[in-house]
Length: 277
Image 1 (spheres, one colour):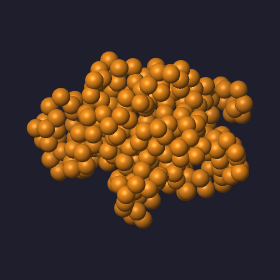
Image 2 (tube, rainbow, N blue to C red; image 1 turned 60 degrees about the horizontal axis):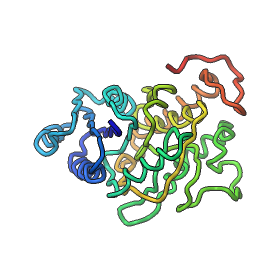
Image 3 (cartoon, helix red, strand yellow; image 1 turned 45 degrees about the horizontal axis):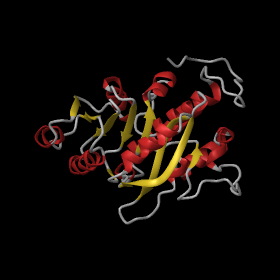
Image 4 (cartoon, rainbow, N blue to C red; image 1 turned 180 degrees about the vertical axis):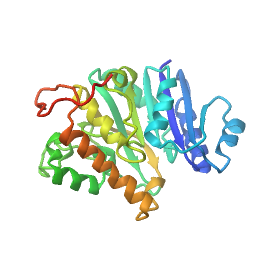
């Protein structure tokens, strides 16, 4: 199996239908499988999947397990050489998967890659190339963790080698809307950390991929359209708890507990608290 695609759904039936149609179209001619992990949706998403996408493998949870745990449920079932995590609120370009796989096959040092993301009205999303939004940038600067993200231009905005919109480049963080990763790399660094319920899980895994000595890439020669639905409702208590809680988890994990992965230039100042299986 060349490719395993995983989507997590929670009450986004209409967008999920569009996302799946675009993935199936983009994967024509490939040896692939698709998993949808449903987090106890109440909008008849599972019924829609059975009626319209009988070839899709569905994992139906009885409660909302969160994004990280749900993706891990899918990863545990995959058989592909590559694992593609894609949001249920995206449209994948017709040639996106084909081009992305070609790029990964040509770059043996790549642990993962992301592609150019645009909004439905065609606006370029900067998160495509650095993986996180302004609040996360502030967080990394305040905690001093920005030194571990040299390719995100957090400390030197005048970097001449900084990736532009249409420039292929190595990056720090892959955006969770589209993460194509080698299965062997996931086996080495571990799956998503399930303490990150809704946010931050992609940043954490991207960081561990780099810590293990692999590279993350931004590849702009193809695209996805991202509706970014989970960020449309903000300033609720649940949003604040999940979004900023993820930052606290990340700070606790890497400021005080350093994983047992050694990479040149990233010294271990504290004893490891866990091992990546």
